[in-house]
Amino acid sequence: RARTARLTTSEVRPDGTIDGQLELEELPDQSVEFLGGFGSYERLRGGVRFTDRNLFGRGLIGSVAGRLSQRGWRPTAGLTDQDLFGTPFVGNITVEAFEREEPSFTDSAVGGTVSVTRRWLGKLRSRLSYAYFDRTGAEVDVLDPAAALEQYTEGRVTLDLEWDAQDSVLIPRNGYSLRFGVDVQDPALASDIEIVRLRTAATYHRELTDWLRIGLRAEAGWLFPQNGSANVPLPERFFNGGEDTLRSFREDLQGPLDANGALVGGEFRNLFSAELRFPLFNSIEFALFGDAGNVGSRVESYGFSDMRYAVGPGLRWWLPIGPVRLDAGHNPDRRPGEDEWVIFFSVGYPF
Image 1 (tube, rainbow, N blue to C red):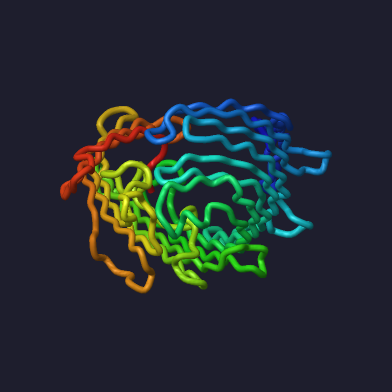
Image 2: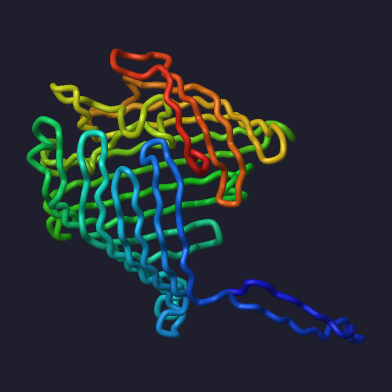
């Protein structure tokens, strides 16, 4: 990879060709990055990452990183081959350990993932992966059935497909994206549980005028237990709520409850969002948003009943790392114990 490129020309030949010299200044092979930030759920967070882009002198990318927040920690090590065995596929191996505090449980595990990724036709990206994690340190604070499944092994094969026709990854103004994913856990894959999960998502962005843009998002997910709902651990279930989902609820605080009022998640989820974005001045943007979503206990009861909503304003400040975002989500059908307003501070668009 090059840091800078400089082209100098000397003369134009009669046949129209040009004599010239191209000078490239390469980026250093090794780098150290320090990360820091603040999120509404994780609160203070930071990390450090070391990367070698020419590991063993073979063009491999190796990295070691550590992240820490007030909700958990995550050290990782990875190895990437950008032309796996001389093919258009990208190969990646990651090993990691983590612990993260969720509203109803603490999730912790040790394991790794092996994946191959390829772009097709410019806009289509496919990723096939196998992940194995030993979840031996989870702590669950709910009634049966999840309490009996605090410790298990996860062996999962996942296929992800994405068609990305957006004009920008960080700040999309026009275009759309479509995503589909399926993952399978089975004893044949070294898993203690048997489930099939399907995920779909679509986004659409359009500049309506010079001063008005719209963003739309629709997502759905289904979890099919192969041995009954009582054998689905909490970390595998769907939840709603947070800075990137249903913004009238804090992180993962919307979904089915047990008899004690603790969140137990569900086997399906729907999520819909719309945003109107108005440039104010320089790099500041104002937004009005609406979210709608639900989580259901049993996949056979899939539908759109008991939808919950969020409406509110937001501000975005465009920086090189992406938009820094402040959103205020109002719950128009608040129930006992729920907040009327929830404030989120984060980096990046919600979709």
